[in-house]
Length: 554
Image (cartoon, rainbow, N blue to C red; front, side, top):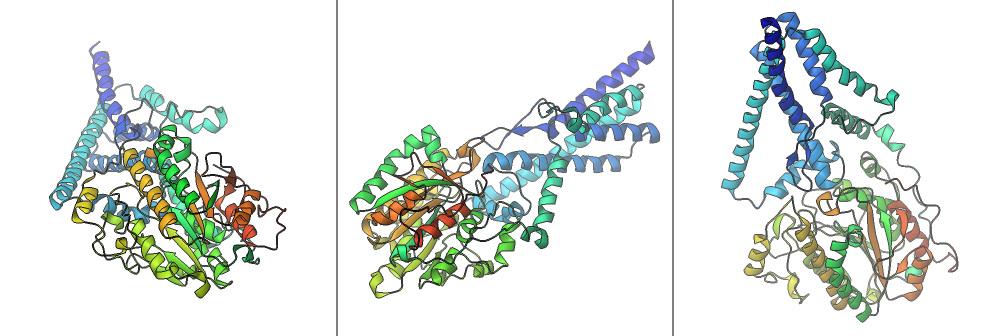
């Protein structure tokens, strides 16, 4: 009787550490924030590890504290990886990539902490370290208790069977045809293996090169443009959610109406469509390269391989037809030798733009000021007295976390100077709170600013003959877009040339700012459409689609 009671008590003492360890290895994200929520699922890693610990304990007796401490450290690493695995996709809307997120993680950290005072940054660092140490102590205590419970338990054979049965069931999923996601949390080790496999593939040029596929045919002319300036604006985080989400659409409706009125007042029409971005919530350069090269860059290795080739691009195509090509890159804050692939006539990074005003947060230069300076430097002179320009402008002011948002300045001459933004304007913008857990208000504010400066440019500066293409680079982070959002982005074409807009409409675009825009495929499909529309050898009554669209896999 006493032996039975002793065995029962030992078994009960196993329950608490098993529950605690299972909880810290199976939690999910408390969307849309960065907190965690505990979920009633099983950890395959814990069950398998518990079986090994039980067998070792029954074989060797007492496990040394050194070994138990090492196990505590291992579990701590798994917990931290679990947090990254469930939090980053919830924020960005895409899985973690060692290849992309690993190399740019420090920049995200710098962007998120640059406005924190030293004391707060130091305090946060100490808090994280103390929290990690406390978590390690807790985990180690649970593992010690588990080991001691295994040593005292008299029913080891039955316990082994109870622990190993769910593990075997998990491994048997492909054969039993059961979806066990509600029963088991995805093992962290599986996610790490998957990320490592992607990293291996990305660093194997021979393997990735085969994924590039053929480039579009860049042999046509640009005569349909009539020698006008072409400005391609990649609008940061401008996604289809701005139409598809009712709350966001209503909030941005006045800003879209402002833009529509500015286009009408300046004698321009607009046609719109949608395309699939190769990325979501970040990694904007994948979208830029996909459109400029016509190559599918959804695979993380394709982009780097592409930059090592001499594949043609829209940049080289325009340059070959007498255009001066300009990259306006206010977000580029470090040397970018890889950019030589595109062959722009001029790279205007954050230092070469010539902005003399105050820095608005991490991204420093407001989009309006960057475009105003570019216009004065490259576009102010009538095109009849110079070579036409092909400008690529990725914006930054609507980049996550969408703060600070610069104020719009009505005087486009003043915005280029030192005193365009008063200290009060800067202080007000910098004082606005940054929230990664509730970024929607800031996102809406940043998009209103984007529509405002774009409307102002149409009214105040843009040459009447210029062709302006505005395309979202990707959807905003999932904390804004919501769960399961598409990877679609809007694309708008502004022009006073009705015949040119008609060519776009025959390619699938629709008149207006995109309320009923059609999905035309991926960004490489849009590249082919642009090449076809710009080439006046096509019959005006013909097909401008540029060939069959690539498969849509979102």
